[in-house]
Structure formats: C-alpha cells, structure tokens
Image 1 (cartoon, rainbow, N blue to C red):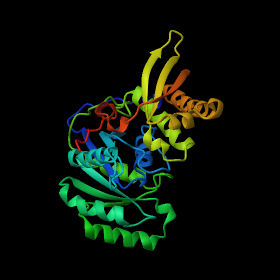
Image 2: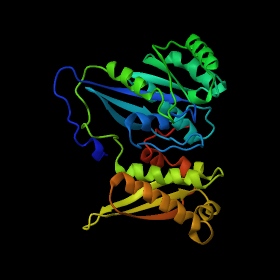
Image 3: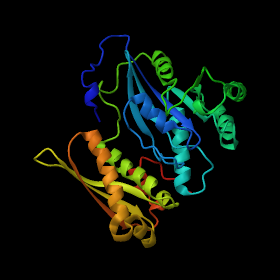
Length: 312
C-alpha cells in the first residue's frame, strides 16, 4: 500500500542505510495499534476501544532519514480462554522473539496491573533488546509516571524508557528517531513509499471488522470475521469489492443485518468511506453475512488471518 504524500521518497543508496523490525507488545488496549498508525503516518491497522481487536501480526513501515523501521503490531497479550485467544497470544510472543527490538507498551493509567505484571515476568524469556513505552501519559500525573518507570525497570531490563501519548502524538517523534538510529545496518526491504506489507484486500477486510466493533456493542464482534472475496478494478478507474462477514449462528446474522438491513448498510457505508480515503478513488462495496458454524475451530480461517492453528 502506498501513500501519494510520500511518493517523492527515494530509497537511499549507500552503505549506511539501516533497516530492522520493532515488535510492539502489551496487554489489550494498551494503544499499540494507535501508536503504529502514528509512527507510520497512515492508517495501517484498525483501532477500537474494545480489547483484543488486533488478531494477527500487522506490519507498518516507517522511514526516518536513512532508516526504514518495520513495526510489527501484535495481538494484545492476555490470559487466553478460547482457541482463537491462544492463537493470538502465541502470535504476539512469536513476534517479540523474531524482532530486532521489542517495544513493551504499558497503559500508564492502569499501571502495573495483573496483565502487565504477567507480561513483565515473561519478558525474561525474550532475549531481544527491549524498551519500555508508557502510553497515555497525558492522563496521568508526573509523579505516578516516575514511580511506574522505576517499578517496571526493576521488573525487566530495558535499554530506555519513553513516555508518550499515541493519541496526541506527544513523544512519538523522539521514539521514532531513537529507534531509527538503532536499526541494524542493512538495505531497505521495502520501497520508500510503502507503508504496510498487508495487501489492500486484507486491510479492507480489517476496516470492515473495525466498523463491526464500533457498531455492535455485544460480544458478537469477537465471534465474527470478515473476508474480502473479490476485488475488481473497473474500466472507469473505480473498484468493486465484495466482502463476507462470517458469524457462528443465525441469531448473530440477524443482529449484523439489523432491522430492514439498517445495521449492515451503516457498517458498509462507514467502511466504504474509509477504504475510499486510502485508495483515493470510488469504491462500490457489497457486504454479505453468512453463518459458518464453528469457524473459530477451522484451521483454514486461522491461515487466512495469518495465525497458527493451535492443536489443542
């Protein structure tokens, strides 16, 4: 996915270019997806006030001087209950082990709660270099931030601590600059204007799933998935996109559709507007809702989401 605003960027040539992977890990709702979008400068992953929105590894690509930083947004780490939960947590930790550097994100408002405590304890297993990122500092008093920094650094070994607000952007430029200087010497892995390695079909499906989260306030979004079935470029420069929302029961299908189809139309219109903003041309989006019983136990669905299928 490219952004016209960065179309003039050129991949630098020379022995001093840097490129590396930074995994962002943390408890659900710590703000990882919001930070990723802020660092990249464009929407590459969905954001929701609901927890556990990110399901697979989403990569966002940022450029800072002669460095290309590939940020990996991982699913929130929590105590898994379902098979899908276990797959998400396993994926998050694999992202941490495979990166050049790990950014451990903690919600400063919550502090070192049970989820953060468990995360910090397990960090000892991760040999990768680590930094601490305290998010939402605009909502917390300074003395509490200093205490939180001290406690977290006593529990795990961090090279540096950054205090940021992913929502306002405060502190994000310093974080990005620091990371850029510490990426390994390497040629860039992606074109200068590429902001994500996710195909547009996948991002479009994620955008529609985000609108499901926004529109439906029950547990239903956690029992649904969205797949882009077709994407056709029309002769007039427009796109025709067909997506299917899969749910597990007929009662859920009726909720997604809503009375007279109102809910589905609202979800579709909201998703279509956002997709248009990204592709910068007219999009005809068609949504279908189907029941696929037990999709949460279907290995094929996990592969489609980029997740390993847990055997147990």
